[in-house]
Picture 1 (cartoon, rainbow, N blue to C red):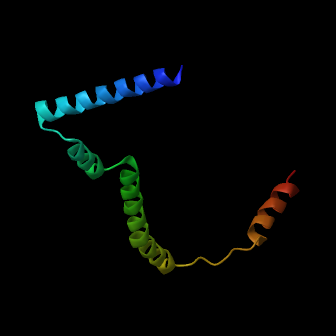
Picture 2 (picture 1 turned 45 degrees about the vertical axis):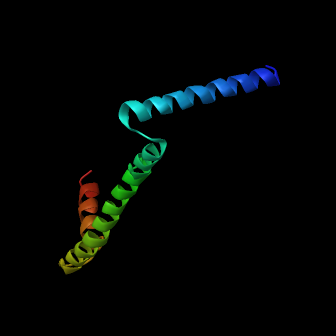
Length: 96
């Protein structure tokens, strides 16, 4: 494509865009600045994800300390040694 052809194509594209913008203005009263404002105000997918992350973060910050205190308040079982298990195992071996 020659430079002149590229320039003509760009000019046609600009004219098409201008005519579409003019149509939107006259038919619907929409301006480019109005569209920009609407797009800027619309929440993006990243905003939605960040909202979900903030919700999870808040849940974790509120719930985990409560869970940790509940776990700490549970009675602790003494650690068992292996004597009972060894006795059972040796009893089984001795019957074989």
